[in-house]
Amino acid sequence: MALFGRYSPRAKRVIFYSLHYARQAGSGYIEPEHILEGLLLEDPQLFNLALPERPNLVKDLKDELATWRGEAIPQTQKKELPLSRTAKAVVAGAGTHQHTFGHASIATQHILLALLTACRRNPSWFRKGTELRVQQLLSKHGITPELTERKTSSGIVTPTTWVLDDPLVSLNAQIAALAELLIEKRLFTRAEFVSLLDRNEGPLVPETFLLPLIEGLGKNGTLTANEQQKVGTAAAKPVDKALSDERKNPPS
Image (cartoon, rainbow, N blue to C red; front, side, top):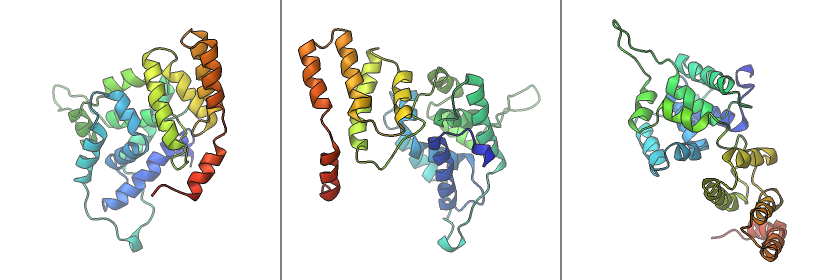
């Protein structure tokens, strides 16, 4: 569909999930709140990056959105649902934000910005300002267009491609936590880490993250040559057998 031609795989999944939430809500259309629910499912890290001081933000938003739902559409009546007028504005607005910032593709952060800005009417002397219900919800929880733009305008802030069901994901969650720490320590930038994830289209193997990281730590003097060799050898050990064993004997 041409409308989603510049959407990254993750951004496309947000729209796919929004169809599920629209059906759950018994709606005849995909609305902006359903897109927000899809975004919360696909990329909770985006909200954590925007407001790290609010660790329960994603859960709070999900809980409140759940109270908006009506009765789910019966399984026998489920069909493709169209985007509402306001949802179309969100989809188009994401492309506008991506073009404005000059980013490579339409990512989840552009959808969030579009949710915050679409259909917004500025107040004038004869007309009150209007905003979507989803914008009122996000604003109430501290997510504003200004905050989101400040946190995301410099580049893509979370991966545009991510594999959710790979056995390496749990390991990659630890790698991501380590990366966040090292970004704060300014050993490398968020853009470098996200670019690394996107080049590999999914979870990272040691050769694409750990080994370059170890080399970088050696160059800046954090690791001695002996330490660098020791941890580098450990990181380079193959993981295929361990993953195979895990598939055969999943944890109970």
